Amino acid sequence: MSEEWKGFTTRLLHERYQPEAATGALTLPIFQTSTFVFENPEQGAARFGGTEEGYMYSRLGNPTVDALAERIAILENGEMGVAFGSGMAAISHVMMGLVKKGDHIIASDALYGCTFAFFQSILAERFGVCVSFVDTSDMQKVMDSLRPETTVLYLETPANPTMKLSDIRALAQLVKPHNVKIVVDNTFMSPYLQRPLELGADVVVHSATKYISGHGDVVGGLAVGSKELMTSIKKSFLKDIGGVMGPFDAFLLLRGLKTLTVRMDKHCANAMKVAEFLRDHPAVERVLYPGLPDFPQYELAKQQMNGFGGTLSFEVKGGVEKGRRVMNSVRLCQLAVSLGDVHTLIQHPASMTHAVIPREERLQVGITDGLIRLSVGIEDVDDILQDLDGALSK
Ligand SMILES: *Cc1c(COP(=O)(O)O)cnc(C)c1O
Image 1 (cartoon, rainbow, N blue to C red):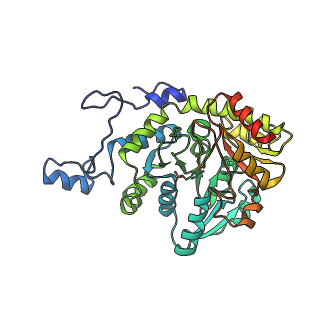
Image 2: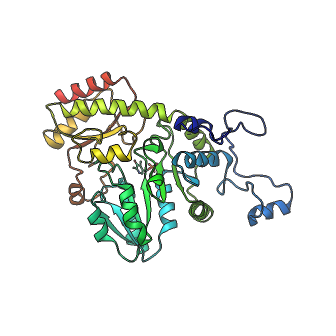
C-alpha cells in the first residue's frame, strides 16, 4: 500500500501492510517457530555475520513479532520499534541500553510502581546509577536536578495514577542542550492520543498489555526510537538478556491494534462522562482527569494530547474505609489491576499497584490512601454510572 494516506486509522491498517508473501494470507500468520533453516552453512554464517538479512532464531528476531514492532514505529512516527515480553521488559532493556554505572537519571516522582522499583532497587542500589525522583511537571525542579552526569529524563505523562502531566516539548527544549535523552512511557495515551517523539522525546515505551492489546489477554511491551539506538537495544540487550515477546502474543497485539482508534474514542467518551458524574457526586472528594476544565493542567492536556484517555482516579469522602466499601460494592466494574481493557477495571493504588513505594513518598506525590483508579471500559456508559452510583450511595 502506498503511503499517500494521511489519516491515523488508515495508516494504522494500511501503511507498509502487505499480504503475506508466500501464501497471500491477508492476516499475517503466527510464525510459531524457535528456529529457521539455512540453505547452506555460508548463509548461516552470513546471517550471523550481519552481511545477509534474514531470520536465525526467534530470540534474535521473528516475523510476527517484527511486524508488530514495525507497526508501532509507524504509529509513533519513529524510525524503529522493538517488541518485548512485557512493559517492564521494554522499560528495563531500554534503560539498560541508555545508562551505565555512574550515570544519573531524572524520573517523574509519580511512576508505575514496578518502574519505580526497577530504578530504585535495581539500577540505583545494585548497579550504581543515581536516580532523582522529581516533580517533572515543574520545569524549575527538573532544571535544578540536572547534573553533568545526567543522561536520561524519564517521564510518565499522564502519571500513574495521579494523572499529573509533564510538558514533553518544553522539557525536551530544556534538557536537549545538556545531552540528556528523554524516554516517555506512553501507555496511558497510546500513539493515537499522544506522540512523544513528535514533541521531542527520544524513546517511547509502552506496556502493550494495556490499550494496545485492549482485550486483557496478553502481556507485552514495545519501544520506539532512532534506528541506531533501537538496533543496539535489539542486537545487544534484547539478544543477551532475552526478554523477548512470543509470536502468539505478537499476533494478539497486532489484532488488538487494528481497533485501537475505535476503542480509544469510546474509552475517552465514557471516561469524560464518568469524570463529570464523579465530580458532581456528593460522596466524592475529588476527581483527577485531564479532561475536566478544572484539572490544573487542562490547557497542557489539550495541547499535548489528542484526547484525554480512558483512565482516571478519584477519592471518596471518608478515606480508605469508604473507598474499600465502594470497591466491594461495584458489580459491573471489575476489581482488578491493569487498565486499557474493554471492561471497566477498578483498583486501589496504595495497596495494589503502588504498594512498593514507601507510604511517605506515596503521599508526597499525591497517591493518597483513599485514591481509587478507574480504567473506564467500553460498556454502555449509563450502566457504568449506575454501578458507580449504587456503590457510592451504599
Ligand atoms: C502496566 C504498566 C507498566 C508495566 O507493564 P507490564 O506490561 O505489566 O510489564 C508500565 N508502565 C505503565 C504506565 C503501566 O501502566
